[in-house]
Length: 305
Image (tube, one colour):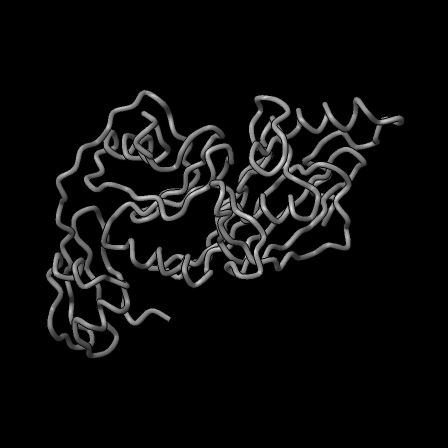
């Protein structure tokens, strides 16, 4: 429950009205500000209920990288932005690539006149596609980081896995750790706990279409759990086998969260990518002895619920 009424919000300042007396420590705790970041804002030492408080957002010196590559924006408000990442694109610049989703988002915001640098709140793999949440203003970064740390943001994925995935497998609870000999992750009883939910949309002898929900956020979690269950994700170059150049068949298609300021329940979703349809038709229908009655993954998805 919010203890503040937010009366104004733009790129340069925010006005809020507290519902009870408090101190700057209450503001720091509510917005999940670090000690260093709290010193950058003119927070009052003490305040009274119904007192109007203005918080000014200082502008940071930073360089915007220009890019001609477009970015698909799914949702945007004063502090949040959700982008649709294509496969074969990094979320953050790793120093070895000249392009990233974050660069594209910031170029878009710069061209819109937005004065702050956006920061991605989480990552998805290079070959994975789908939704990525950004914070548009550094002041609110702590609030969004807290949402992820407290598992208050739910992410659901679509994936195509090899073979007939058993419908009775609803959950994987295998801890995950780093393989000391490679850059891959492995199931390890001494690793960090990892929990994944599975829903089988359609299973055939050659390929299965799954919905997967992450309850924890370990590196490569879905890929590791699927491979450990002997059904690696199609085109997984690390935990399975690369079969063509269409990329890893894994899409973060839905995210749910509560807006940190308005407390509004938000849900963002994406349609199935055409590359999923193409992979399904290529591997299922060309090997089927009898043509299935349903040829559309969208219909399969809707009829599975």
